[in-house]
Length: 419
Image 1 (cartoon, one colour):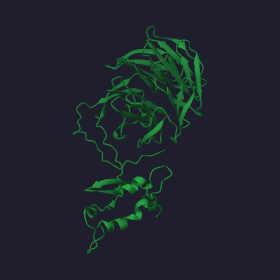
Image 2: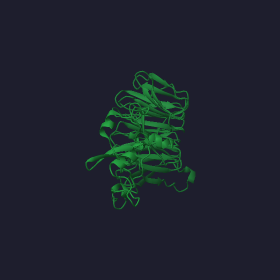
Image 3: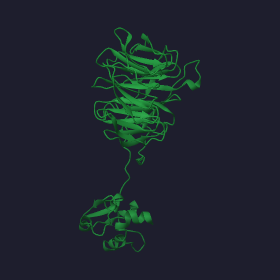
């Protein structure tokens, strides 16, 4: 009764009188006339003047007419009618070809924890629990170089686009800058009080951003090695940090279940997103849109810059999500601790493929975890770092078409979750 009054209150009392006036009352056999009987929908004549002037329609607290949420005006012949509003449906997702494994690279002696692809797209670099950084040829998968110097697991890597420099960080609290012409560490950035878990280079300013177990994000001047800012606010390990040229310039995800957007100039938080219920281990920016996604065991959530407006939930990957990657075609990939990878259409949130990484012979099933993901610069190759000490490279199946791999999709009613 309360719901009826709330949604249909403005027009509820007018239905009987209006129906009798316009000859829509039941006939002798008790059935209504016209098409409304066939559709099972009762049409209510719309009094245009009364609707425009407001009439006796009550206003809701949000400023719209209470009936407008459930009813909409349509023209039938010469008359306008109020009919129930149709629930919005999810738009049809774009078809993406499925991804398949085409190369497995072995060489590390420990869990492979991080990946970075060089801007020229000729090689990529991996860091592992064996404390070694290895550089691999992207086309052939052959080892080009090994760099030693860290005394604990290497957790983060980034390759500079302007100089032959590689940046790394690890659980030994060290942040290093490697000169790839001399193949040695040329700078050290001292300041983290505990393990350093991730880093990223700012695309336009010469600063390096690192984060770690001391719950801080540190912004370093690359040349002078000075710590410009210590961004404090998280209350637990900061596991992921990303930089972009536009405001907000720094985005971080933490085990305190929050995502923070930072004002880099002021050195303070611009927005704190508290929607996640579990720790946020991964954040990824969409290269083609002004949006980003954060991954947590409860959900993957998409957000809109600059204020972190919630867009939608991507539900179904029920595992500890360690990494997210997105390419310019709108393919979002989430990788988890149990070796599963889910491929999503960014726009609609449709999960078009699920993969279980095959464990290397000799490894146990618990070593199926995926720790890091990265697309190459073209977005056509996906590189994964895994717990079975291998690096796997995936590519799109070129023989697949919409006929051979159709979308298993039906237009459900789109219920947008507001949390």
